[in-house]
Length: 221
Image 1 (cartoon, rainbow, N blue to C red):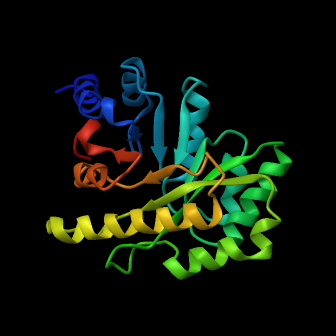
Image 2 (cartoon, rainbow, N blue to C red; image 1 turned 135 degrees about the horizontal axis):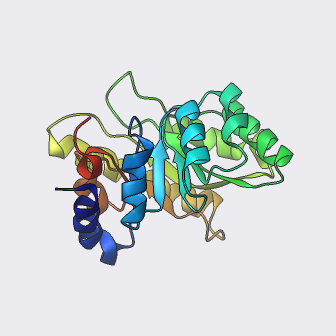
């Protein structure tokens, strides 16, 4: 099936569920991304800052670019002028740098806190208690040019659906707790980014509002 056929199939699956589809376009050439764009896709996710910047320059400006990969503080300045959402905030230090660069660009940048939910040491993210400690801190309350709009998590890479389901369920539970404790009056805290090509159906069942799909749209790398 073509990229446009794949997109149509997925959108038919999720359109009634209020779930945002993020097309993970890392390593894909501009021509392939343009094909997805021409099929109506407007939200794309990238892992590497340099690649993201180059694609932003080359492609239509009404694309919403999401940074979904691990982000180093010294790279924030390159995407601060245009990034729509940063999924991978895993420290106060990074959040402070995003705030600094957002201020320079006279913007407020939306962010998700990445929560460590997988049983794998290679994954990044805040532990549950670290996320709560960050949100309680005076340093966080000083940040006026960022907006925490939700949480993101990456499940364990396993065929055991029960494990994946439990990890997503726990993240949803944390999301509800943080919402009621810190963002009760804030309509913008509503995003739960979880689910990739291998597990997005389980993620949607567990309350995901954003799914990050690469191979399901573009084919295997």
